[in-house]
Image 1 (tube, helix red, strand yellow):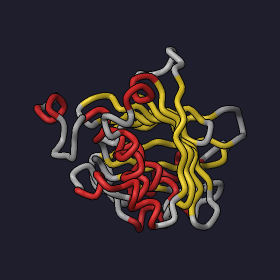
Image 2: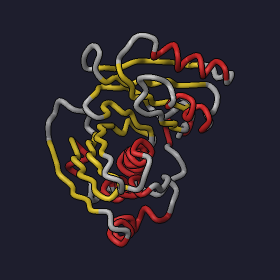
Image 3: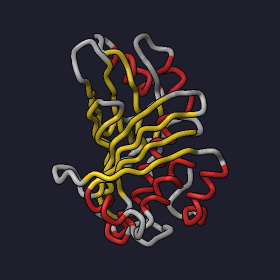
Length: 219
């Protein structure tokens, strides 16, 4: 743990958990969908649900969906900016006490019609933890450079992806594979010590059984 885990990042406030964390939750949706978003439905849980307006959580989520970072002044006016850009959005609340107290679920539709849903929590100091992508339980924090690889659950898929990383001299810090069922859709989450480049994602996308490959640079 370092001082930024305690104090939070340089950011637009008022809260590192309720505002900066919310920005990053919205931003991860934008990164994963890979295009501008035209529609989003956001459900807040716990303390997010209780205080999202007063703490700027709504503005933070929308700012992230627009691609802004935690220190961008546009966060304060993100609701109006989103409306001007044609982003349609809605907010809902849930007080399910079995969830993380600072959690949001977002279902989004991109300009091309591509859809994505994620669930993530703000864990303090502006940090987040993503726990679900498109109905598949996952776990990553965006504190490392991360490769997200949706793929078909079939023999050899992991080996092919890690071979490409090795060829680019990328060291894997951690790797997990998540799936709902055998031979269905799965997601590799690979955290790396080195920064990843677009050539890696292009090569991975060409592999058999790979659905997509998204780079998430460390927040």
